[in-house]
Image (cartoon, rainbow, N blue to C red; front, side):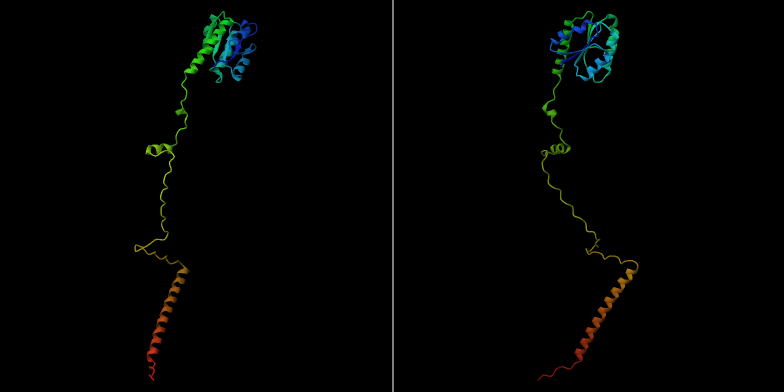
Amino acid sequence: MIERVLLVAWKGSPAASWLPALQSGGFTVLLENRTGARAWRTAKERGIDCVIIDGLKMVSHGRQTGSALRDTAKTRDIPIIWTNLHEDDAAVVQAEVRPDVLLPVPTDADSALAALMALAAEHDAAEASRPTTSTTERQAPRTATALSDSIAGEPAGAARPAAPRRKRKSVGARKPGGAKSRAAPLPGPMAGKSGQGEDRRGSSDTASRACSRTTVRVRASLPAKRER
């Protein structure tokens, strides 16, 4: 929608008096009649929707202003209406400025207002014909998990059963029969101590068995008690 208009008309040009006529069409019009740099800065910083450059005087300044607007990314798409175009300057203006509307000399306020209103109506129609984003397209895209659930036939976000835990393997190695294998004997001095312990246990077992046999012999040698 075109609402804010910048009119670039140098001092002494009749176009500087077009403000009341352009404002009567419902537009907010700003006038720049000093330098092209100020016009370029105003168009870039003040949200201008359309620029009208009058070419009746100081045509080179007008071309520089229009070229700067086209070379700046922020102002490149702003529509430009060139008024009071001289036939000798038509080719240069078309090549450097590339205006959307060209109005030859002589141009008055009514012609400029008519061109501005036609351009505004054209832009409004173009915006209305643009496809709007549907509600389905505005929805957030589904995640990969939700997509896989829908492919598998499960509702998106449904709780899944917990996976069974794996049993941990025992650290100690087992023999084929099921019994754990004894640890290997320790190397070095500890191996000797371990062997000595086994020798002591073996000697004590032998002594206990010999003692029990001696006791049996003693009891066998005793005479039997007489009966009264």
